[in-house]
Length: 123
Image (cartoon, rainbow, N blue to C red):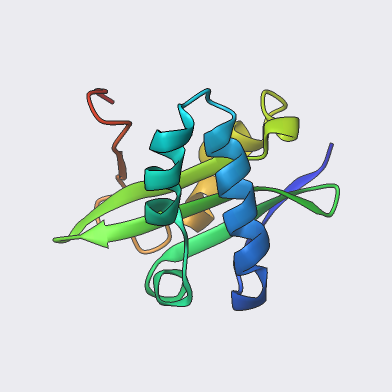
């Protein structure tokens, strides 16, 4: 399988948001939680242009989304979503731990990036 990162673009927002919804829904959350959570996870044009956002492609097809955001001078891994059909096949590992991470973290002053998990998780 050939993976690559491609800068996310405005015309890809609906497919990316669909991917986010599928990925979040695949975790077995109750429907009422998903109805409340999914609108908060949507990526809009403002977010896209204010943050480092990439689509993960496998063999030319979109299979994931990753974004780094900055809050009060700190960089955070804000989104990492892999389509359920592509999970456990290396797409997330490619996005984070191979040479592509350098592209995601471009501009990091201290070469660090934090991640924040689900409420109650420690990362």
